[in-house]
Length: 273
Ligand SMILES: NC(=O)C1=CN([C@@H]2O[C@H](COP(=O)(O)OP(=O)(O)OC[C@H]3O[C@@H](n4cnc5c(N)ncnc54)[C@H](O)[C@@H]3O)[C@@H](O)[C@H]2O)C=CC1
Ligand SMILES: O=C(O)[C@@H]1CCC=N1
Image (tube, protein in one colour):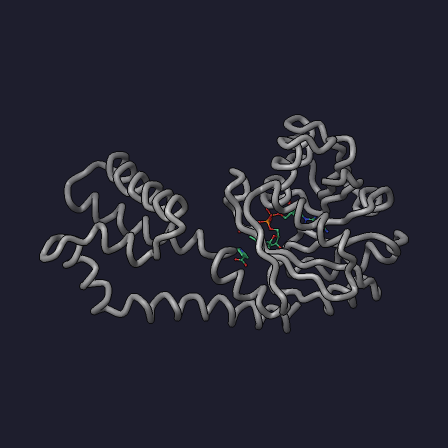
């Protein structure tokens, strides 16, 4: 990928994951700068990856061709207002990773800049196992799209969406969803402990089952997920009873309700911020 000068505004978990993926795949650290109001996360980034650091956003952005907007959604407006008043932004590519702020609103926050790509990554990016959805309005060049796609490919798989509203679908399916799996595993671990196992063994049992199941899905793209489920489910056996219990208690409705709640919240956030 092109090694453009890139600034990360906000040096939190997501920025760290992306920076780690970039450095591991040979992106020159000298071309990466991160800014954050406090020093500890910056110091860690410098010592782990030898990137440039600063506490001044404008200093990071001045030299950068690409600016990653990586602060929490509720802080985006104040951060962008200070930025547009202190640095010339024309000609730069902006890549937002924030949930619930659309490109039109980001453009407004940035004083009319319109070279903006929206992305929605997830936390497994920290292990290079991320899933990122991307959206670019038609005003963004092919070269800039390629750059953003290459960038997010450093930390996992990517999928472009045609319509911006579909980014909210990406949030529900991939951005937020690691937490759904954790919630499911927490419940499984608890019940495994109820069955008499100690905490550590209970965790090992459920986490290894989850890892194995995930690998089975990834390594068998030719099989529908329902077929993989069928392979575990002996007629009249234990799995059939467990799956029946899920179905009788409305697993599909529960899951779709949770995903819709995530989409609805993303829509609400778009109005709030
Ligand atoms: N955590 C997740 O699973 C995901 C988060 N996101 C989005 O990523 C963005 C960042 O999230 P995280 O990295 O999890 O948050 P985080 O809280 O770890 O990082 C945000 C960083 O921004 C810094 N910051 C606050 N005000 C600032 C300012 N004015 N200028 C520069 N830096 C400032 C904070 O000190 C913090 O280090 C959010 O917008 C979130 O919606 C997107 C996908 C997944
Ligand atoms: O919960 C959130 O709002 C963010 C976006 C996706 C994951 N975490």
